[in-house]
Amino acid sequence: MRANLVLLPGDGIGPEIVAEAEKVLKFIASEHGHDFEMTTGEIGGCAIDAYGDPLPEKTLEPCRNSDGILLGAVGGPKWDDPNAKTRPEVGLLKIRKELGLFANLRPIKPYAALIDASPLKKHIIEGVDILFVRELTGGIY
Image (cartoon, rainbow, N blue to C red):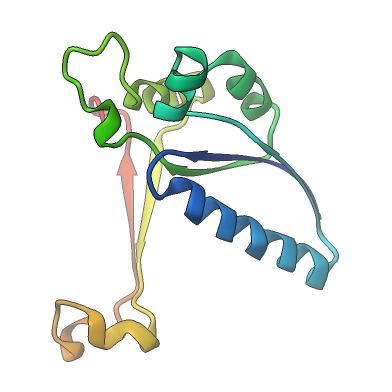
């Protein structure tokens, strides 16, 4: 399988998460003969700092031509000024609109090794496997 992927680490913990996900993708590619061409772009607060725009065209264009996008996180305390001219989450809203995205997939499946770390009792959370599909057409989300 060949895929063109865009990695958007974003802000906060996003760069750390995306860096680890990139390692996993490279491992999968090497073990299963896949070819993932990966490029990186900026979105959110880091893009505001670098370009004055939460989603610059130089990030959006590769996204338009990709097979998939891996997005870390957007925003953080540094950009929480309610009077700011532009805010990081505007980049998230813009990418959704520009690419016609309409759903956010939120899986809930606890890992056996971490089940005791859950705030829910083991007998309640054990065996849970749910996928929430959040439709993005009903407002600002």
